[in-house]
Length: 186
Image (cartoon, rainbow, N blue to C red; front, side, top):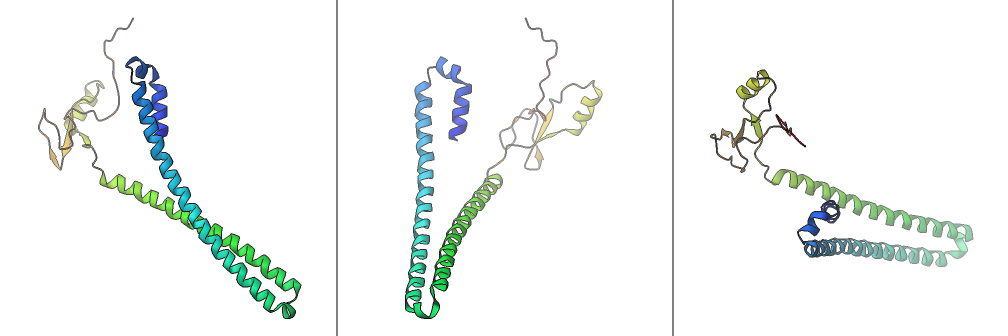
């Protein structure tokens, strides 16, 4: 939302200045920046919390290996104790990165789930369906644009001159074409 606001503001800067709305857009940018920073701060705080507990687990593991190495120093030898410490530290790094990767993957999957929820739960504007008889007549009438659209409203066709259930006008175009006919420009 913040990046979109910046891009739209830069594109429409002359209009914003012409209507003297600079302060409004500055306040909107500050508000969106605050929201963005609050979410980033929360994410980083959770990441630090996770790192703290992973490091605590690693410290306990290194302490256990140290106690084990001191207790059995005469039987194990220096090479075996060194190998145990090396493997413990490698395992700690692997564990920490695995937990962080798992947490980030779960976060990303939740984001995909949220997008799926938004795509299925937000009502869609009326789906425009061209009247087949009008579409066939426009194809034979010299390729004029299809401006006669019947919008379906819950399985029923809406009456001419009214709006469908989603508020789309009946003559809503079926495609995004603009045709200029007999237009003179100087």
